[in-house]
Length: 114
Image (tube, rainbow, N blue to C red):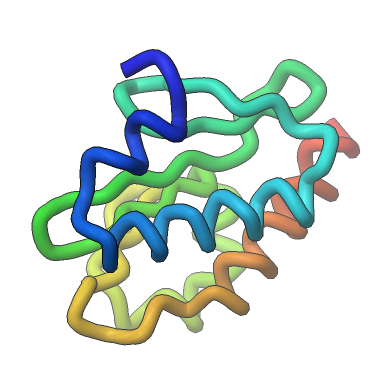
C-alpha cells in the first residue's frame, strides 16, 4: 500500500467512512502533520516525530497515540481493549470521535514541546 486513500478504499463503505472521519479529524487538528503509510497503516508525523496511527481490523479500529497519549486518557479508554500505546474501538459500537480528537490535540501539544 503506498497511499492512505488506497488503504482506506480497501474496506467496506461503513469502515471507509469511519477511517475517513478519523483521517479528517487528524488533519483538522494537526494541519502540519505529514501523512505516510507506516507499519502497514496510516501514520502521521509532526516535527519529524510520530504523532498517531490508525488501522482497520475485522472487528475494530485500532488507534495508536503512543503510550503517553493513552496514559493521559486512561480513564476514558478503560472501557476498551488496550495494549501499550494502542486501543481498540469495536466496530459494533459508536466510534468516540471526540475522544480521538482530544487525544490528537494532546499528542500535537506534546510533540511540539519535545
